[in-house]
Image (cartoon, rainbow, N blue to C red; front, side, top):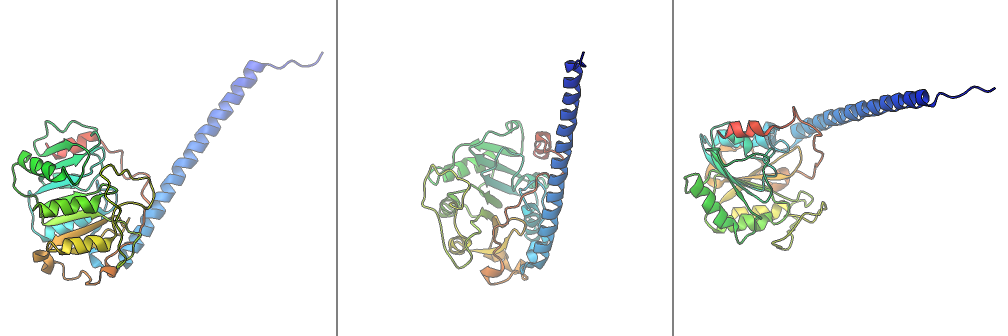
Length: 289
């Protein structure tokens, strides 16, 4: 008689092998992701050091998507702002944006966005959240409501990141007399200065993951210069955000190049897979408590 096969044992061994293989693949994927982040970090540091705008050297990532936090903190330091006020339009789920870091400086402010936050901001004394889809027809009303909620008639810093109608929203705020000392705006880095571009206004615009979004840096410079602002930096790590300051503070940035082409940063949309430990809502709650 031939040998019989103990199928339960065979199946069990094969299952063990599959689990080992699955674990090995997971380890390889995690290692590859970590190596990618190391390479991105090295490339970012090299690009930052070689960029003709020395202000980029201050760029560091904290709670921002890229190195915006470090630039923001340097601008705040040079303008000698303490316990200031902010507004941010387009904040995601509340765990990664350009103004969380200001909570650590004792600032107070308000956010406006269409997404549900992963924490309840209602009990937080230094943060107000207005949930609504932002348009150029409602942004001024929301700005006024936000300022009233935090007890101020003006804000020191505005950050704007909407993946679409940004220049129209910025114009509505500026036209409405909302003139912060610092204004951070997302730009479409694909358009090298002095090339101009801006999407047609559509109140229901949704970004499709392609290059049809926002406006060129030159468009923003033209807009902001008309309201007394100067461009001082574009973040080096990703080329996503432009930093404007009121021209009466321009003498505090003597190293910034006069040529927009030496400030512009091209698209560098290679973001980290992970940065530090997993973000916790409790951290943001603590910062604004």
